[in-house]
Image 1 (cartoon, rainbow, N blue to C red):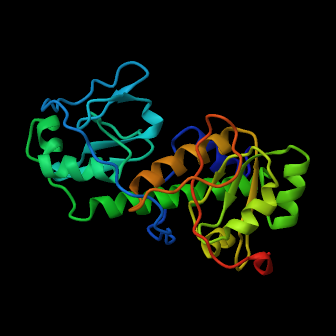
Image 2: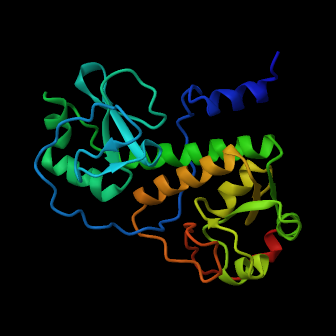
Length: 262
């Protein structure tokens, strides 16, 4: 029989985990909107066949893991389906706030659903909060599975041992401390949460540096961070450190050195 922690992890990996709690941690504004080009005014829903899904606004086909699925729920209300496992015909959008805002302005959901629909007034904020909770949930599972450590010394130890494949840093951490930690190593870095929120996951007041080992959870963190970044209000600037070729990284805001926090 699986322990509660093993069962929770198994549920998340199979996409059947229960709904997340309503509370969400604050997210530092770190991304800017990207303009949506003119797309054909054909907003039919995707048939959800094959490995790709079509955005009802941009018409681009993408991997479903990198997009946001919506379904028409009770009372014809549009419901975001982040795990893509709710019943019903899926309406897919690129995971970008500006694409969602364009969909709302063009009434793309109604056209794709071929019916009048009800849309929550704060839908962009709802999705951003849900994606934040998703990142927090996966980080918590990563810690409990022994695939992540926090603190400068421990993260540095994993880097030196080539055990870390991903670094999660506080969005309000300093550029100097980040550079000192990496010391030129080509490891991707993401910064989805501020130090206080990151620390809460690891049972600390603050956490600035988190190292993550290889595995499915590290991949999920990368994907969810990318979706969350798309819904932030300013686009993250590139890190001024060496990164592995082809790996995305999120920028950090510059602040005073944070060694004292860890």
